[in-house]
Each structure stands twice: as C-alpha cells, then as structure tokens.
Length: 67
Image (cartoon, rainbow, N blue to C red; front, top):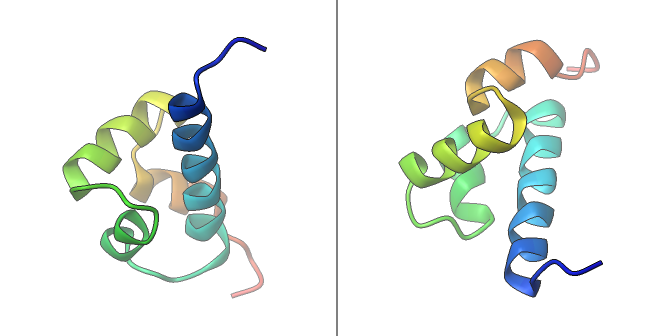
C-alpha cells in the first residue's frame, strides 16, 4: 500500500479514538491519553484534520444512542 508504519499506527489510533467518542462517555482528554497523544491540542488538531470535525463536535454528531 505504500504508507509508513507510523502513519498507519496514527490512523488506527484515530479510528479507535473516534469509536470511543461515539460509544463511550469518556472525556476527550482521557481518550487522547489512552491512545498516546502527547496533548489534547495535538490530538484535536490531528483528529480535526482527519475527520473534518473537532472531537467534541464529532461526538455530538455521532454519539451512540445506546447511552
């Protein structure tokens, strides 16, 4: 596929973080630490670049109705 291992790992972490935003009530800060981002600002910048929404807005639009 040609993508670097680091990029693959970062994208995988972002997908898992997005799942947690949808399916849990964990704080954004706790999710960013869980997946090894060094700060919430870094996590928010990379998440927004990937999903075109900041984490809080992504959660509001996609939060599982099961909660």
